[in-house]
Structures are given as structure tokens and as C-alpha cells.
Length: 253
Ligand SMILES: [Zn+2]
Image 1 (cartoon, rainbow, N blue to C red):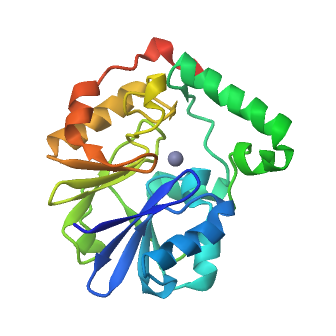
Image 2 (cartoon, rainbow, N blue to C red):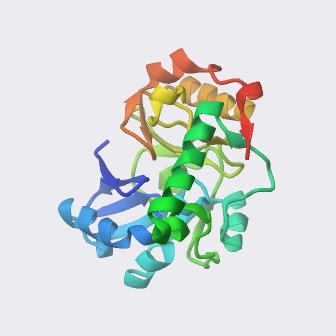
């Protein structure tokens, strides 16, 4: 599968081509708009060529640009899980299912970063720490998917399917192509490895669910993982690191 990374301030979105159109997996923070435009221009893609946006989950760094993109091209269909649909309406990262930072070092790093931002870069505070995004109301043309939904069933002529991969959030889904490429959103990550993330994302809602989702990805024969944070990596990394972060080390937010 030809997967084009669109690297934004924090989030990497992905474009996948079919015929003469593209699907986009995730968007970025609301403030990433200019960077987003530059990146898709660099990739020689125009917004009018995007037919679908698949959202891996409702968080601010994945859905922040929805409205801005739709203003330019309202014909794009947004694809999401049913749980995502409800959470998008709220316009804020879900806090009702608990969760916390994956370990103490990450917790300290995030606290330090927030302190740094508030002291040195006062103006950036709203950008980085409010965990909010413009609420999005499901439109008739948008599409709800569940685990097992094939892309062809929803009008995307690519060989692949949706798998449910909760744990980071309750509404997380991944896109698994038949050739083994798997775009996972935050169901795995390749960031801050020096602080012991071990291919987990920094915030985890339920670590048991998170690793169960890894088992699902592994058992479905995924080969290459495309995370929203960090560079793509081999499925072997998930096999080697499953279960490495422990529930007792999660630091509640
Ligand atoms: Zn994210």
C-alpha cells in the first residue's frame, strides 16, 4: 500500500491513494492548518482529491482540523466509530473513562513541559494544554464503522478493513490493509522511547485493553505499524514489547 505520511506539529496523518483520489487518516491540532496545507502541497495532493477522512479516535490532536478541512471541501465523508461520533460532539478529550500517563518518567516529562510552556512560551499554553477541539456534529453523509467493516463496503476501493483497537481511548480504531500495513492512530506509538514508553502512547485509558488490541493487531497478521506519533515500525516491536508497561506504573492524571 502506498502510504504518504503528513507530518504535523505532533501528529502524523496519513494519505492513502486509490485511483485518482485519496483517503486521509486523522487530521491534526486545530492550529496545524498552515502546516497541513504545506505538507499536502509538498505531497502534490489537493484537498479536492480527498474523498474520506477516517478518524482513529476523537482526541484534539486527531480531529482538530475537521471543520477547517470541510470548509474547503464539504464533500469529504468522515468515517468513525459509533463511540467516536458521541465524543466528537463534546469537543473535549474524554475524561470519563479514567486513565493516565504510561509511567512516572513520562508523567514528570509532561509536567516539566507544561511548566516550561507556561513560563517561557506563555502564548502557547492555550494551543498545547487545553485538550479541546471544535465539536463536530455527524452529518448524513458521514459513515459509522465497526470492527470488521471492509473499506470497500463504505465506498473506498482499497483492500483493507477496520479493526477496533481500544485502550488509548474507548473509541480507538485502526485500519489494517490486506498487505499487512496497519495505520493505528494511538493504539501504538514510536515516541519518547528513552523514557520507557516501549511503543505505547504516553496517555493510556486502560492498559489491559491496550495490550489486548496489540494481540488483535498481531493475530490479524499486520506487518508494518504506522503510528500517529513517531516513525513506522515492524510488528516485531509489538511482539517484543507486549505487556512491558504495567498497570501499577500508570500515573493517574
Ligand atoms: Zn494522538
